[in-house]
Amino acid sequence: MNFDDIKDHNDLQKVSSESIWQNFERLVAFIFEKNDFKVEIGKVKTSNKKRRQYDVIARSKDRTFLVECKRWSGNRYRLSALKKATMDHRERSEFYRELTNEFVVPIIVTLIEEEIQVFEDVPLVPVSKLNSFLAEVGLGLSSPQAPDESNA
Image (cartoon, rainbow, N blue to C red; front, side):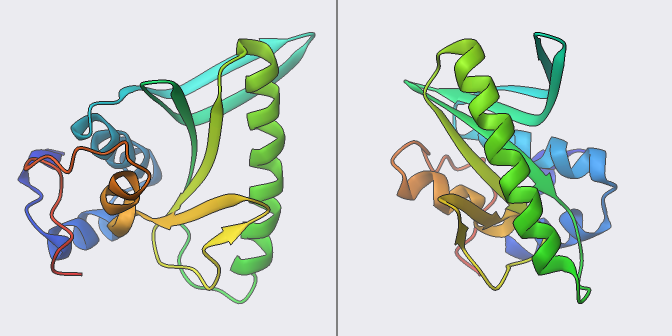
């Protein structure tokens, strides 16, 4: 899958919805890379017999984004599952912070826009708005190669 062929919001939506979950994680990593982040996918950290896996770890400047990717589509239990996933991700993020002593920012990237945008101080960002989210927090470069969200 060549993510460089994504030119606008419609291309991004199509690729996001048609991709399998592994490619969804790669797409999220690609957007971070296009904003000059160093990225790792599917990284596992272990300490004291505890093991945690991270979908995407994205580092830039003095921050590390720990990204949980959720490619769920609509169902009536999605919101409660998303809240539970957010709590689990907060725990994994704290584990990572204690292990690495890095300043971490947990974030959940979703396939579709959710009813809530932040839960328990964790941003829930639809993949279609990830590039603009990074620009908002002052880390994204809004590079011309990053998918264009102006049509959103």
